[in-house]
Length: 180
Image (cartoon, helix red, strand yellow):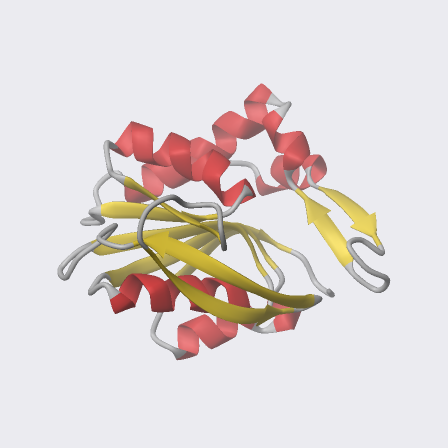
């Protein structure tokens, strides 16, 4: 095994009642201050996708950017940024969505992907799937296909990963947590 999920989980901190009461926020930022943990996480994805036919790596604002940039660099693939509304210059297309504690809107630059592109979509966490489904709509609206959704953490009790699979989108995560 390339990564030790117990070690990675030991780095992820749970912050209770953030960003609102009743939410157990899974904080991956300690991974970035632990060289061994960061190497394990990055290498797990690099080894998983090194022989795949993905053509692009798309990532979601903001924590998803950090690992996805390493993966894109190592695999020599274009990196596509999917950002919160108003953060990208030039012509963009947007998609609104609901998340477990509010509403938001994502944007992608027009022409970032095209028909025939095979995209790995990366985010730090899969919860209800709202953010990922919005990103998938943005990518597909420009003709791309989603090869797989990857995340560090899956929260299966929130059903996002199940909904993605039911929509014929493969899902991969390094670790999972029960509860919200």
